Length: 457
Ligand code: UDX
Image 1 (cartoon, rainbow, N blue to C red):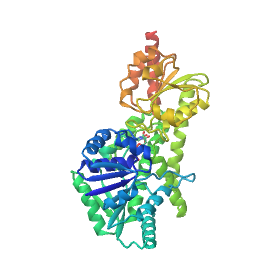
Image 2: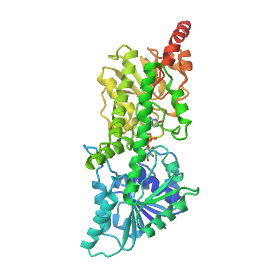
Image 3: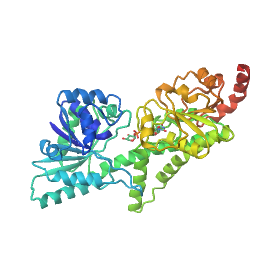
Image 4: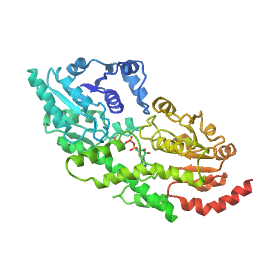
């Protein structure tokens, strides 16, 4: 089966590489010549575990090709995936200009029946719009070939995209064309070995499933963050609350980890786009608005914790561990860690940062305050700092040599904004511990900690 992919970002490159790894003959196209040249050299534009070897293996086997030529991309394949970016616009709506451009261009080269798969995250109604746009263009070109559009949203998480592609929880296929349904179902069935539920539905339902799923994930996160903020005030440990909640199958244990808020290129964008869709349909999406508001405030609540415990951050040195919006990726888009860093700088602190992978992303993309110091490891980040902040739960931060870290620090605060550590262990190393929704711990044990701390003098 010949497959073409237009757009080699997170979704396009992962989809193309994985389909080629299942034996399909895949061409990935991008208009960015440098990106394509790099891909031909095995240089990937994104960091995704497992992706490098899949791309190299299949490129070597000539099952995976890269091109900037859209005519070749369209004419060679029966199935064409559109996976170009749909970045948020000022008003929160998704920008469809790339999707529309691609649809208009590919219409010129349709040389036989095609299945055109809309896989970018697009507002409800986009697949229908694309179908009309392509048909109108083909009519103008007196091109009578048949084609079907399919809405096939992806549910790939960054840092786990290859695994998520090969082990999806469901595959959503939105089209009324039985022929297109069968073709797309056949592609996935030949690729994904385990039994996976297929949701065969129409355009609009498929498009909304994506937004509603992401908005619900964001809702769970803002919900547990709001409960954790209450826990901090009433001296309850959020970990016990979220663990017991998750035991209820109706709630589920995942996405109930409190922290500095959700980031990334999806949850923030998709929640805002859904609010916009509501406005355009005169539906006030009050819950999702609150989810966004809680998330926006969370980084300030985290910075307030630091400022309160240190009795002010002016001229204080804060070491921040983790810059990416989640572990396993170099993506810093809407990263809560970056939000906290900017807030600390605004409040007069000096900030040192370390991240195993995303430091270059920060250097490249952010003209952050000159007072930021980029460190080569977590211990340099802590050296002479008044406080250390664990903002992104990279594995390399899960077993820090706390005694060594404390010995090199000027201060004694450990802000564990992902509740990674057992507070008792941190306090036994001479720190004061502050987590998220765990103030009871730092309060209850602070006195004990103080004793231990004094004993350690
Ligand atoms: C998300 C969806 O999970 C995925 O299904 C969709 O296809 C794309 O958007 P992603 O943005 O890669 O994936 O990251 P995700 O794992 O959802 O995490 C998003 C943010 O939420 C991260 O900043 C993460 O730290 C935060 N998060 C996640 C929490 O704060 N608590 C949690 O319990 C889970």
